[in-house]
Image 1 (cartoon, rainbow, N blue to C red):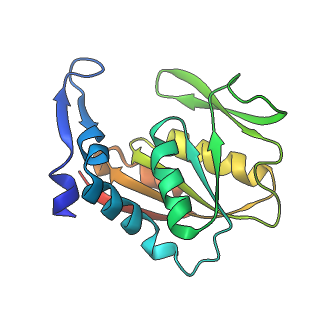
Image 2: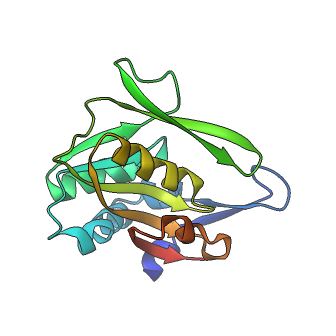
Length: 171
């Protein structure tokens, strides 16, 4: 995954001092890197009978849609409150400094679905954990989670203890 890692740019002190933001836009801009990332994201799940991919706003939409295409299944967005036009199921969760919420259309997944959750990056794991819970709240089976980048030092994977987690690049 060195070829992908080389396409990730560090942005110091963003969004606030002391944070080094991992900018994946150069990777997304490069067609070969983007193709490699989408292929490698789904590789461990090719025989897992995935029926739908879900992705969180916003970069999860990019990688989730590509993963869905790789698996030849549909894509379901998980959005911030007030962004989805139909009836929704919602889940609020705590962040390090405050709270947040996610929503999904009530018919986004159902009890027969086997879902792969995809996002660009896992840090503390709070959003990923909430996404898993929201998918299961609608009765679907969460098969696993796939991330382009995992910030190991923040230990987000621990919040996903019962789920299969696959990350392409580790920091």
